[in-house]
Image (cartoon, rainbow, N blue to C red; front, side, top):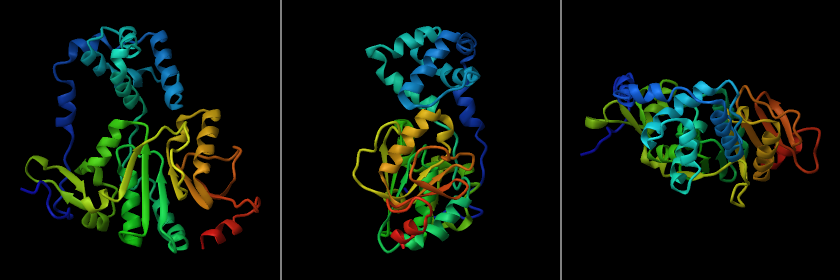
Length: 316
Protein backbone atom coordinates (compact mmCIF):
# COMPACT_ATOMS: atom_id res chain seq x y z
CA UNK A 1 0.00 0.00 0.00
CA UNK A 2 1.29 3.43 -0.90
CA UNK A 3 2.48 5.28 2.21
CA UNK A 4 2.14 8.71 0.63
CA UNK A 5 -0.80 10.20 -1.25
CA UNK A 6 -0.39 11.57 -4.77
CA UNK A 7 0.07 15.23 -3.82
CA UNK A 8 -0.13 17.51 -0.82
CA UNK A 9 -3.00 19.93 -1.42
CA UNK A 10 -3.98 22.90 0.69
CA UNK A 11 -6.45 20.99 2.83
CA UNK A 12 -4.63 17.67 2.62
CA UNK A 13 -1.64 18.63 4.75
CA UNK A 14 -2.92 19.46 8.24
CA UNK A 15 -0.39 21.07 10.55
CA UNK A 16 0.59 18.86 13.48
CA UNK A 17 2.38 19.92 16.61
CA UNK A 18 5.53 18.01 17.57
CA UNK A 19 4.69 17.26 21.22
CA UNK A 20 4.79 13.50 20.65
CA UNK A 21 8.31 13.71 19.26
CA UNK A 22 9.53 15.89 22.12
CA UNK A 23 7.92 13.75 24.81
CA UNK A 24 9.57 10.59 23.51
CA UNK A 25 13.03 12.12 24.00
CA UNK A 26 12.67 13.16 27.62
CA UNK A 27 10.35 10.73 29.35
CA UNK A 28 11.98 8.70 32.11
CA UNK A 29 15.30 10.52 31.88
CA UNK A 30 14.96 12.90 34.83
CA UNK A 31 17.64 11.34 37.02
CA UNK A 32 20.33 11.07 34.38
CA UNK A 33 19.49 14.52 33.07
CA UNK A 34 19.89 16.11 36.49
CA UNK A 35 23.25 14.39 36.74
CA UNK A 36 24.48 15.66 33.36
CA UNK A 37 23.27 19.26 33.32
CA UNK A 38 26.58 20.61 34.64
CA UNK A 39 29.72 20.73 32.53
CA UNK A 40 33.13 21.78 33.79
CA UNK A 41 35.05 24.53 32.04
CA UNK A 42 37.80 22.05 31.16
CA UNK A 43 35.38 19.65 29.48
CA UNK A 44 33.54 22.48 27.72
CA UNK A 45 36.78 23.92 26.35
CA UNK A 46 37.91 20.49 25.15
CA UNK A 47 34.64 20.04 23.27
CA UNK A 48 34.93 23.52 21.75
CA UNK A 49 38.49 22.77 20.66
CA UNK A 50 37.52 19.46 19.04
CA UNK A 51 34.65 20.99 17.06
CA UNK A 52 36.87 23.87 15.93
CA UNK A 53 39.72 21.60 14.81
CA UNK A 54 37.39 19.15 13.06
CA UNK A 55 34.70 21.37 11.52
CA UNK A 56 36.10 24.89 11.84
CA UNK A 57 33.06 25.95 13.88
CA UNK A 58 33.77 28.29 16.76
CA UNK A 59 31.39 27.54 19.65
CA UNK A 60 31.11 30.67 21.75
CA UNK A 61 32.36 30.73 25.32
CA UNK A 62 28.80 31.52 26.41
CA UNK A 63 27.30 28.44 24.72
CA UNK A 64 27.77 25.86 27.48
CA UNK A 65 23.98 25.52 27.90
CA UNK A 66 23.66 24.74 24.20
CA UNK A 67 26.37 22.07 24.41
CA UNK A 68 24.74 20.48 27.44
CA UNK A 69 21.30 20.67 25.84
CA UNK A 70 22.50 18.78 22.79
CA UNK A 71 24.80 16.23 24.45
CA UNK A 72 23.26 15.22 27.78
CA UNK A 73 21.23 12.43 26.18
CA UNK A 74 24.42 10.98 24.66
CA UNK A 75 25.89 10.66 28.15
CA UNK A 76 22.94 8.51 29.15
CA UNK A 77 23.25 6.35 26.04
CA UNK A 78 27.03 6.01 26.49
CA UNK A 79 26.62 5.30 30.24
CA UNK A 80 28.99 8.14 31.13
CA UNK A 81 28.49 9.80 34.52
CA UNK A 82 29.90 13.19 33.50
CA UNK A 83 31.41 15.04 30.56
CA UNK A 84 34.97 14.14 31.53
CA UNK A 85 34.06 10.46 31.25
CA UNK A 86 32.25 11.14 27.98
CA UNK A 87 35.32 12.86 26.51
CA UNK A 88 37.50 9.95 27.57
CA UNK A 89 35.11 7.61 25.80
CA UNK A 90 34.87 9.59 22.54
CA UNK A 91 38.66 9.92 22.49
CA UNK A 92 39.10 6.14 22.61
CA UNK A 93 39.12 3.70 19.73
CA UNK A 94 35.77 2.33 20.93
CA UNK A 95 34.24 5.82 20.78
CA UNK A 96 34.83 6.56 17.10
CA UNK A 97 31.14 6.27 16.23
CA UNK A 98 30.21 8.42 19.22
CA UNK A 99 32.57 11.12 17.94
CA UNK A 100 30.44 11.30 14.79
CA UNK A 101 27.26 11.61 16.88
CA UNK A 102 28.79 14.38 18.98
CA UNK A 103 29.93 16.32 15.93
CA UNK A 104 26.53 15.91 14.27
CA UNK A 105 24.71 17.25 17.31
CA UNK A 106 26.98 20.26 17.69
CA UNK A 107 27.14 21.28 14.02
CA UNK A 108 23.52 20.78 12.91
CA UNK A 109 21.44 23.97 12.84
CA UNK A 110 17.82 24.80 12.16
CA UNK A 111 16.71 25.21 8.55
CA UNK A 112 13.45 25.19 6.62
CA UNK A 113 12.10 25.21 3.08
CA UNK A 114 12.58 28.45 1.10
CA UNK A 115 14.40 30.21 3.91
CA UNK A 116 15.36 33.76 2.85
CA UNK A 117 13.09 33.57 -0.24
CA UNK A 118 14.66 36.55 -2.04
CA UNK A 119 17.61 34.31 -2.93
CA UNK A 120 15.34 31.83 -4.71
CA UNK A 121 13.67 34.69 -6.58
CA UNK A 122 17.11 35.92 -7.67
CA UNK A 123 18.05 32.42 -8.86
CA UNK A 124 14.81 32.14 -10.81
CA UNK A 125 14.80 35.58 -12.43
CA UNK A 126 18.45 36.68 -12.64
CA UNK A 127 20.61 33.57 -12.89
CA UNK A 128 18.84 30.69 -14.60
CA UNK A 129 18.13 32.35 -17.96
CA UNK A 130 21.71 33.49 -18.77
CA UNK A 131 23.10 30.10 -17.78
CA UNK A 132 20.43 27.94 -19.38
CA UNK A 133 22.24 27.55 -22.71
CA UNK A 134 24.14 24.77 -20.96
CA UNK A 135 23.20 22.56 -18.03
CA UNK A 136 23.34 24.72 -14.91
CA UNK A 137 25.44 23.21 -12.12
CA UNK A 138 24.61 24.20 -8.55
CA UNK A 139 26.40 23.32 -5.31
CA UNK A 140 24.61 23.63 -1.98
CA UNK A 141 27.52 23.62 0.47
CA UNK A 142 25.55 23.28 3.72
CA UNK A 143 22.76 20.83 2.97
CA UNK A 144 21.71 20.08 6.56
CA UNK A 145 18.56 17.91 6.50
CA UNK A 146 17.75 18.76 2.88
CA UNK A 147 15.27 21.62 3.00
CA UNK A 148 17.55 24.04 1.15
CA UNK A 149 18.69 21.72 -1.67
CA UNK A 150 15.14 20.51 -2.28
CA UNK A 151 13.96 24.14 -2.41
CA UNK A 152 16.66 24.78 -5.02
CA UNK A 153 15.67 21.64 -6.91
CA UNK A 154 12.05 22.76 -7.12
CA UNK A 155 13.03 26.11 -8.63
CA UNK A 156 15.43 24.46 -11.09
CA UNK A 157 13.00 21.72 -12.06
CA UNK A 158 10.19 24.19 -12.69
CA UNK A 159 12.39 26.39 -14.89
CA UNK A 160 14.54 23.82 -16.69
CA UNK A 161 12.78 20.46 -16.53
CA UNK A 162 14.48 17.15 -15.75
CA UNK A 163 17.72 17.52 -17.70
CA UNK A 164 18.70 21.17 -17.61
CA UNK A 165 20.32 21.21 -14.19
CA UNK A 166 22.62 19.32 -11.83
CA UNK A 167 22.61 19.82 -8.04
CA UNK A 168 25.23 18.67 -5.54
CA UNK A 169 24.35 19.04 -1.86
CA UNK A 170 27.04 18.44 0.79
CA UNK A 171 27.31 18.49 4.56
CA UNK A 172 29.76 17.43 7.25
CA UNK A 173 27.10 15.43 9.10
CA UNK A 174 26.35 11.88 7.96
CA UNK A 175 23.18 11.91 10.06
CA UNK A 176 21.59 14.92 8.39
CA UNK A 177 22.61 13.60 4.96
CA UNK A 178 20.73 10.36 5.66
CA UNK A 179 17.68 12.44 6.61
CA UNK A 180 18.03 14.51 3.45
CA UNK A 181 18.34 11.47 1.18
CA UNK A 182 15.12 10.04 2.64
CA UNK A 183 13.27 13.26 1.79
CA UNK A 184 10.57 12.84 4.46
CA UNK A 185 9.54 15.75 6.70
CA UNK A 186 6.92 16.70 9.25
CA UNK A 187 4.11 18.69 7.68
CA UNK A 188 4.82 21.76 9.80
CA UNK A 189 8.03 22.11 7.79
CA UNK A 190 5.86 23.17 4.83
CA UNK A 191 4.86 26.54 6.26
CA UNK A 192 7.20 28.62 4.04
CA UNK A 193 6.79 26.56 0.87
CA UNK A 194 4.89 28.26 -1.99
CA UNK A 195 1.61 26.52 -2.68
CA UNK A 196 2.36 25.46 -6.27
CA UNK A 197 5.61 23.76 -5.21
CA UNK A 198 3.72 22.02 -2.42
CA UNK A 199 1.22 20.61 -4.89
CA UNK A 200 3.73 19.70 -7.62
CA UNK A 201 6.62 18.22 -5.64
CA UNK A 202 5.27 16.89 -2.31
CA UNK A 203 3.39 13.76 -1.30
CA UNK A 204 1.12 13.51 1.73
CA UNK A 205 1.73 10.70 4.22
CA UNK A 206 -1.08 8.28 5.07
CA UNK A 207 -1.62 5.71 7.82
CA UNK A 208 1.52 5.45 9.94
CA UNK A 209 3.04 8.33 7.95
CA UNK A 210 0.14 10.65 8.67
CA UNK A 211 1.45 14.10 9.63
CA UNK A 212 4.48 13.73 7.37
CA UNK A 213 5.27 14.60 3.79
CA UNK A 214 7.71 13.27 1.22
CA UNK A 215 9.54 14.97 -1.59
CA UNK A 216 8.57 13.41 -4.93
CA UNK A 217 10.97 10.63 -5.91
CA UNK A 218 11.53 12.23 -9.30
CA UNK A 219 13.03 15.24 -7.52
CA UNK A 220 14.95 13.27 -4.88
CA UNK A 221 16.68 11.20 -7.56
CA UNK A 222 18.01 14.36 -9.23
CA UNK A 223 19.82 15.67 -6.14
CA UNK A 224 23.27 14.27 -5.31
CA UNK A 225 23.95 14.24 -1.58
CA UNK A 226 27.55 13.74 -0.48
CA UNK A 227 29.65 14.09 2.66
CA UNK A 228 32.08 17.00 2.65
CA UNK A 229 34.00 19.07 5.19
CA UNK A 230 34.24 22.70 4.04
CA UNK A 231 37.70 22.92 5.60
CA UNK A 232 38.90 20.65 2.79
CA UNK A 233 38.82 21.19 -1.00
CA UNK A 234 35.87 19.53 -2.72
CA UNK A 235 36.94 16.13 -4.05
CA UNK A 236 35.89 16.75 -7.64
CA UNK A 237 37.14 18.58 -10.70
CA UNK A 238 33.71 19.81 -11.76
CA UNK A 239 32.98 23.52 -11.85
CA UNK A 240 29.75 25.14 -10.68
CA UNK A 241 27.71 28.06 -11.95
CA UNK A 242 26.10 28.77 -8.59
CA UNK A 243 27.11 28.02 -4.99
CA UNK A 244 24.68 28.44 -2.11
CA UNK A 245 26.65 28.71 1.14
CA UNK A 246 24.10 30.27 3.44
CA UNK A 247 24.09 30.69 7.21
CA UNK A 248 27.28 28.74 7.81
CA UNK A 249 30.07 31.34 7.56
CA UNK A 250 28.73 33.00 10.73
CA UNK A 251 30.01 30.01 12.72
CA UNK A 252 33.62 30.39 11.50
CA UNK A 253 36.34 32.75 12.68
CA UNK A 254 38.13 34.95 10.12
CA UNK A 255 41.00 32.57 9.17
CA UNK A 256 38.57 29.69 8.75
CA UNK A 257 36.22 31.82 6.63
CA UNK A 258 39.12 32.69 4.35
CA UNK A 259 40.02 29.01 3.92
CA UNK A 260 36.42 28.01 3.20
CA UNK A 261 35.96 30.82 0.67
CA UNK A 262 39.17 29.80 -1.13
CA UNK A 263 37.90 26.22 -1.41
CA UNK A 264 34.55 27.41 -2.74
CA UNK A 265 36.12 29.68 -5.35
CA UNK A 266 38.29 26.83 -6.63
CA UNK A 267 35.10 25.15 -7.87
CA UNK A 268 33.17 28.25 -9.02
CA UNK A 269 33.29 29.18 -12.72
CA UNK A 270 34.41 32.67 -13.77
CA UNK A 271 31.18 34.65 -13.79
CA UNK A 272 29.62 32.21 -11.33
CA UNK A 273 27.47 33.26 -8.41
CA UNK A 274 28.07 32.82 -4.67
CA UNK A 275 25.05 33.33 -2.40
CA UNK A 276 25.54 33.57 1.37
CA UNK A 277 23.10 34.26 4.19
CA UNK A 278 21.53 37.69 4.59
CA UNK A 279 23.50 38.28 7.79
CA UNK A 280 26.80 37.19 6.20
CA UNK A 281 29.43 38.93 4.07
CA UNK A 282 32.73 38.06 2.39
CA UNK A 283 33.73 41.69 2.05
CA UNK A 284 37.25 42.28 3.36
CA UNK A 285 38.48 38.80 2.46
CA UNK A 286 41.02 38.16 -0.27
CA UNK A 287 38.91 36.80 -3.12
CA UNK A 288 37.95 37.25 -6.76
CA UNK A 289 34.36 38.26 -6.09
CA UNK A 290 32.33 41.38 -6.80
CA UNK A 291 29.32 42.32 -4.67
CA UNK A 292 26.13 42.38 -6.76
CA UNK A 293 23.65 42.98 -3.96
CA UNK A 294 23.90 42.26 -0.22
CA UNK A 295 24.67 38.52 0.28
CA UNK A 296 25.06 37.85 -3.48
CA UNK A 297 28.48 37.87 -5.16
CA UNK A 298 29.85 37.13 -8.62
CA UNK A 299 33.24 35.73 -9.52
CA UNK A 300 35.31 37.95 -11.77
CA UNK A 301 37.10 36.78 -14.89
CA UNK A 302 40.90 36.86 -14.81
CA UNK A 303 40.78 39.88 -17.11
CA UNK A 304 38.38 41.89 -14.93
CA UNK A 305 38.91 43.20 -11.42
CA UNK A 306 36.67 46.25 -11.33
CA UNK A 307 33.28 45.19 -12.65
CA UNK A 308 31.12 42.16 -13.28
CA UNK A 309 30.40 42.93 -16.95
CA UNK A 310 32.93 40.44 -18.34
CA UNK A 311 31.77 37.82 -15.87
CA UNK A 312 28.18 38.35 -16.95
CA UNK A 313 29.19 37.87 -20.58
CA UNK A 314 30.82 34.53 -19.78
CA UNK A 315 27.46 33.12 -18.74
CA UNK A 316 25.25 34.87 -21.29
